[in-house]
Amino acid sequence: MRFIPHDYQRYCITRIIQEEAVALFLDMGLGKTVITLTAVCDLVFNRFLVGKCLVVAPKKVAEDTWTREQGKWDHLRMLKVQPVLGAKAKRIRALNSPGNVFVINRENVPWLVDYYRNDWPFDMVVIDESSSFKSHQAKRFKSLKNIRGHIRRLVELTGTPSPNGLTDLWAQVYLLDGGKRLGRTITEYRNNYFFPASRDAHTIFSYEPRPGAQEAIQERIRDICISLSAKDYLSLPGRIDNIRYVQLDAKAQRAYREMEREKVLELPEGVLDAGSAAVLSGKLLQLANGAIYHTREIVAGDEVSTAREVAEIHDNKLEGFMELLEEIDGKPVLVFYNFQHDLVRIKRALIKSKRTVRELKTPADIADWNAGRIDVLLAHPASVAYGLNLQEGGSDIVWFGLNWNLELYQQANARLHRQGQEHTVYIHHLLAAGTVDEDVMGALQRKGDSQAALLEALKARVDRYFQEEKD
Image: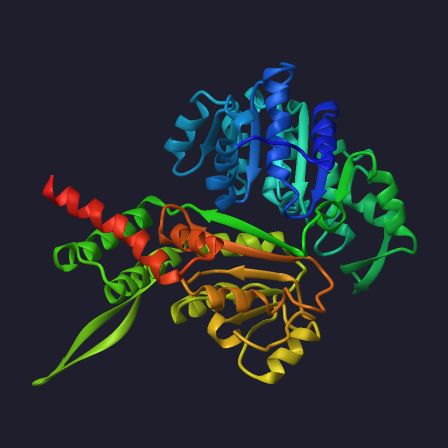
């Protein structure tokens, strides 16, 4: 695909090329990844100013997004993106393989710094979602701080630089300039711009900004931090669709392929009708999400009965979901799930978070959502198909699991993307790469007959597996 940058994208690319330290505080949908890769490509192949670039990203983003984006655009074909993921031996092999851009998850930054020590090979580092480096006490921050003198160029990317307040900015800006703008220590920063909000005789528990602190901080960092909002730069009808691919790990991929093959070969002579297609698709959609229903026989004397149980296979999509929530931190999210076990697992994953989580059941839930008292509202698309006005409570939708029903999909999205919505609506789709998720998303985007699309997508799988059996 040919990349024709918007003016703001061209401006950001130029700033990355010209400056050795810069932060792009850009909304989702403004193209942070392609902006950065375009600048890196120019610095590597045209200006010869960068040899190796390290990208530090959330785990699920590191597994897919940077590699996928590089393969999407014609002008980035010369770049070789090398994921540095998995077990230690696998990471070491990747680091010693040819490449221009090496992508590692943020949890492995301390390991990487310790692995290279003073022989650090990356003259450029990109921190994707730099807000995850906001804590000055975190190991990942301390590790990058220790190696900062070996990094010639640093780029930070995030849409939420200070999700919990201005105190989150110090560590991120320190990595850019070594403390020149906001102070060389967190204590200096706090003393200059904040006062204690709650404390006892020995400990300060929280801080509040002094009058004028926000304006003063913004002025101090204006030259190295670029802040752009989607509503100012995108000529869109109030909606941005974001597809987030989640890579299944090796174990989950094997389970998915085995299930797919097993269910396909159960079909009589490869015949696929609407009923069998629905059953097969449902099983594959469940497995893509991470769990699947199965039946267990219960024998009690001469009586034999069955019980439906849930087998949990993987947490790959749940991990991607939690990372996505982190990226849109501070904003309420309406989450659509497909299966009951999705709901159970999502609620369990959110228990440790500080978010207010509610399942949409009653008019009181609707009122509390619209009043801003709910951070994460969980709903099945069939339960919100018509008439509900939820647009006052938020502007972000996350589809944890999709289904083939185009009408339900459109009506569910219309709960936020409707008259009275004052903000751009972001509709995020979590897709397990290489699974039936991609077929469903393609069918919904084409807006064709869902049953015909289902049959067409699954027929190809049936033909492939029965041909393999013959061979």
